[in-house]
Image (cartoon, rainbow, N blue to C red; front, side, top):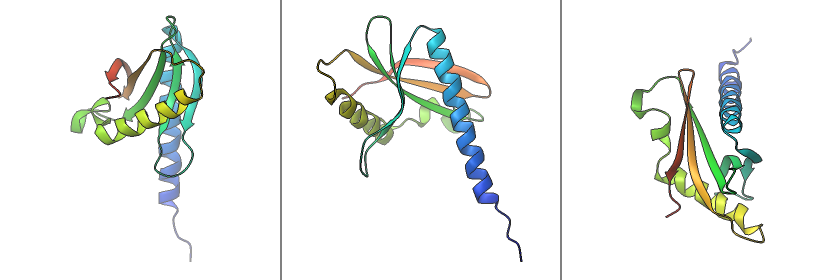
Amino acid sequence: MEFPLKKAAAAGTTKQAGDAAEDRALAHLQAAGLQLLARNYRTPGRGGGEIDLIMRDAAGTVVFVEVRQRGSRSHGGAAASVGGAKQRRIVFAARHYLMRLAQQPPCRFDVVSVEAGAVQWLPAAFDAD
């Protein structure tokens, strides 16, 4: 008896869609003059955080970017899905990343949403507080 592999296929499709959204966000930010420092930065261990893209702008500001994708704007849209818990995990990972540097550069937290084919960049979308 054969069993369909719908869940595995769906997971692969979701991962591919997420990777494509990150690729689009990266291209958008690079076209705006930002330089890629790291992609998919993760803290070690459980309970840590992940940052989709770490960029540097022309002024030297380190930009921690969360990329969110949604098929539609229902339920508040992609940018609205970056709630308090997600922000805390991103800030945790950003602090971990910054600890490795000799000097603390200025930094900010941006969100790039990819919805229905459109890319929207929200600089300074939230604070580390």
